[in-house]
Image (cartoon, protein in one colour):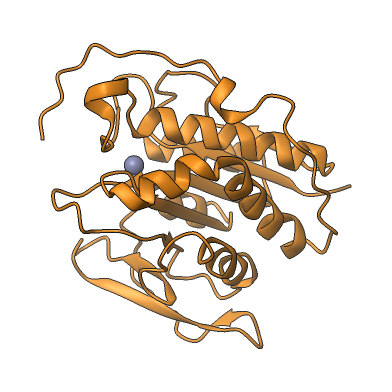
Length: 237
Ligand SMILES: [Zn+2]
């Protein structure tokens, strides 16, 4: 029996997340990109014989981040991944980030994500990081030991990000992945050009961490063919 993976497409419905360099033109927000990528990663994992629990499969908000995590816990997933994209007022901010629970020691998936996503984006810190629940700005970088595939430091702090915090408290190993900055021209272009490859790398990181050989299978539906919903929001930036 292969592993069961939880995939959370960040935001949804009224929670649109960040905007992109093209939002004023195409009306697409972070919530659209997270859903598109989550559906692609799901396809890839299913093609590899894994089972997948999705937090949402449409443009709806399925609940708070804790509720999403509780669903993953109720489904007893072996690992949960929350997919997000970053945005920042300054267009210069770029790169990929992985947030892991403070208590996490195993780093197999994260080491793979850094290596594989590093082929597309700048790895913002060569560590996985988590923020303190008590001080959002206090960031803990957890050094990866690539030999042991474990984190060198483990903190007892509570995690800031509700998804990984609730997963961890429910005994589920989880990551929150900020793929890249939609507000950065280059990141946006690289992501737009390589959606399927990036989905493959994420799925491959998970599949191989569970000791299976990754099977590449081209998505029947290419990402650009996924339905595009135009939104009527006023974009303030
Ligand atoms: Zn987000």
